[in-house]
Structure formats: C-alpha cells, structure tokens
Length: 260
Image 1 (cartoon, rainbow, N blue to C red):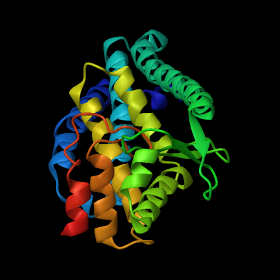
Image 2 (tube, rainbow, N blue to C red):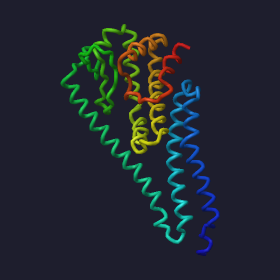
Image 3 (cartoon, rainbow, N blue to C red):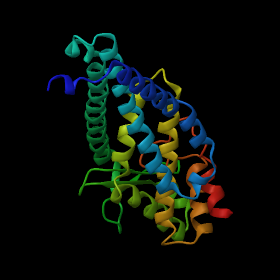
Image 4 (cartoon, helix red, strand yellow):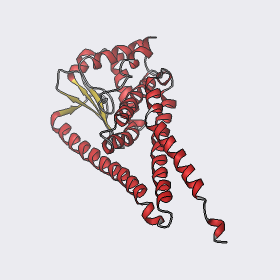
C-alpha cells in the first residue's frame, strides 16, 4: 500500500523541469511580448487579467519548481527539501504585507496633509482643491472616505466638460478599486527590485488601469473632450490612482486610442 504512494523520481525531475520552463517563459518572453503588443490598448480589461495571470502563474510555478527540485535532490528529507520553496513564498508574502502597511500609512499621512493644505470643493462631495497653479488630479482610495484631489490650476485650465471627464476618470479609480490591483504589482516590484520585468509589469499595469478609467469617463463625455483633458493634466501635472512608474510603453497610447 505504501509503495503505491511513492512517486517515481523520473516524474519528479520531469515535472520540476517543466515548471522551471514555465517559470522562465513567464518571467521574461511572455511579459516582454505582452508589453510590446498593440491589442492591450483596445482591450485593457483582458490585458489586466492576462497580467494578473502571468504574475500569479509565474510565482506559483517558481515555488513549485523549487519544491520539486528540492525533492529531487533530497528525496529522503522532504521537509528539508521544501525549505527553499517555503522561504521564497514567505518572502513574497512578507513583501506584500509590508507594501500594504506602507501604502496605508502613506495615505493616512497624505489625507492629514490634505486637511491642512486644501479646501473642500464648493459643489462636489469628497473633492478637495489644492491652491496650486500646476494642473493636478488624483484620487486617494479609502473606502467610503475616498477623496478626489484637484488643483486650482487645473480648475482654471479646464472647461466644464473637461472637468467632468477628469472627475469621472478619478472616480473610476476609486469605485473600481484600482489601487488593490496596483498593490500586488508594487509588492512584486518591491520584492524583486533587481528584476527588470517586475518594474515593466508594474508600469504596464499602471498604464492599463489609466485606460480602464478613461473608458469609464468615455461614458460621460465625448472622446475628444477626454483627450483634451488628458493633455491638460499630462502637460505638467499628475493624474491617476498612482503616479505611473517609469518604463511603461503605454504612456502615449491613452491619447492615441481616443483620437484614432
């Protein structure tokens, strides 16, 4: 009966090799292809799902490959053999937890500063206005207490329709909880700062999230209005749930997809 439960060593080695191959493909060629592809700008929801799948499958295949490699090397000491896989999994989870704590603290500090440096918008709930000439628009997600921040410089520059576009864009970030999506990729980048694909994935997901918010705003305003608003903010300001990291190939795609 016990013999029936023994897995042949050849099967373990073969499975480990396959998992290493999958991990390698998901760690480099697949993300590079995805970042260079043109279809994500037409289907940002699908592209975001693919990026999430690549990240999750890549991490799990790496953990599985480490576990099976350990078992192939030390089959008589399974607990010892699983230490590298367990350590890598714990490393990723710790960085995710640390990133969550850091982001939460940063938002609390930011909200406290906003209370001192900004004023409520006279007609729009949960909107604060910064007395700054630089055009700025962003949101701070915090459940029911989420806040949209606009600068006076932006309000002076936009016409009423463009302002509707900007606010609809920022509200989409809050309502669709894009911050949670970004969090996992920020944690991945933090855990692997030496790995360029982690930075690439972070940048691509941030840009796709902006497109997703644009699509929400397109339901309320015409494409040309949203395009003008993007130019007004992008010329010298900040927009979005988070500042877009360097390295994204999608920065100009937001505008191109609206004027195409």
